[in-house]
Image (tube, rainbow, N blue to C red; front, side, top):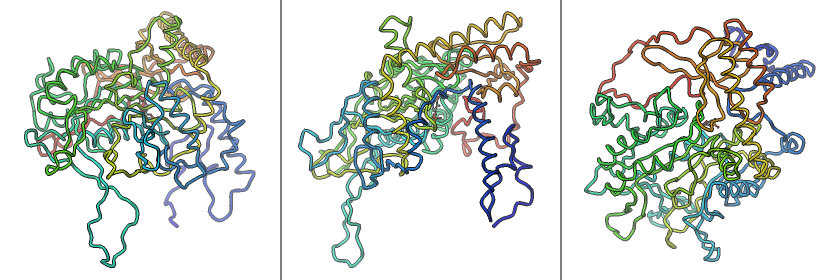
Length: 573
Ligand SMILES: *Cc1c(COP(=O)(O)O)cnc(C)c1O
């Protein structure tokens, strides 16, 4: 047993209301019941207070599950493996999970039911339907769906495939053999005419969630910045770039704009790499984390389509084996992933409200109505509201990396999800919410939250007039967040405000935002505005001169910069 040379409580951050020593865990005896009770009471008081003032993240704190569902805290419900395969861990909630997935498949205009496994024991009409959806309920939030979607995209574009393992060891060699059917993960041979055919290049905007950026490193996916800087230095085609590659695709008007991707810039960046034969991986945002902006998925695809077309990337043959010209997949040479953490759950109801004449505008299309969309991800704890992170990932069967649909190759691969064990309670939570909530109620909720966002913007603008101070108030179209000049630390902590900074012309600008989730009310906005008005120095000096960190090691061809890694901002802080 190790002994700390100094008290950990002297090192860790102090949290008002939760004194660190009260939570120090005993080793020899259990904590005395009264002590444990006090600690739990303090925790409850703390969480209750913070929840009551919560305004700064897109997490809905209006939850109503404890009454009927808390009994499941005494069950270990685990949806390990594919949602559509029963498996042997029978304490699961896959029946509810499939109902939740069907709900979102309908909402996102996908084809259902999902028929992803070619099962030789089922009648022919139930064998694999490539156009049907496939997906699963995530154990993490959208971050997991992002890494899963990008992984699938990378392998699909890189010409990876799965084949049954033909065990070619001589029978009877006396060594144990695996009895189960296994798959091997293989690489299609490179076509002679294009050395870049299986080297996908990834594009995403400067407003993209930090999880996407991180997964470039986890998955070793090359961004256009990495490839451009290493192989085509000085050749960036963007006007006014001086040939220098930006780290990410610019958003419209960069830091000052609404936060959606600049499709004109995207078009020229993608053209450059498509013309060199690279397949294109495009990750779009449907509700950016900080500004809540919606990328126009349809316009983005229209902008890159000519380049895909002239380079044979709309559709291409991926051969498995040079000796077997009849064995190939037809795949696209591009993949569009839609990160719809909040927007994919919220905007369908904005569209319905618009169609019924309750709203003046709606957002751009983003779902499987657009044939160019390969994968969508959504967080369950954001729009819906859940006690822990969860979400939904969805794609189509035809984009899954499955063994080819050939009777000789038929085999179900149930390990189709990112993690092994999966949270089966999350599926129960989502199912219960959806069972209690009609489309009409969701439309009402969309109108309510949209109204709160409009109210917050209006009240901040009124405050601006009273304080005679520019508060930099901005709300992107249909966004549930309003951003404004950064506030002092005590207010950030009290209201759990997320923040973001921009460096413009040598100055650092710090912003905070509020999110109009269902749990936000006019009273809470009023209280927040009153505190902004009456707290001395509510708005600390801002902007401040940018201090560039010292160069530790210069970027050289031998030590190239590969991915820009944000440490603060993007809703992370
Ligand atoms: C919140 C968010 C994520 C990550 O979702 P988690 O549920 O936190 O994993 C990804 N993308 C966007 C745009 C988000 O807003």
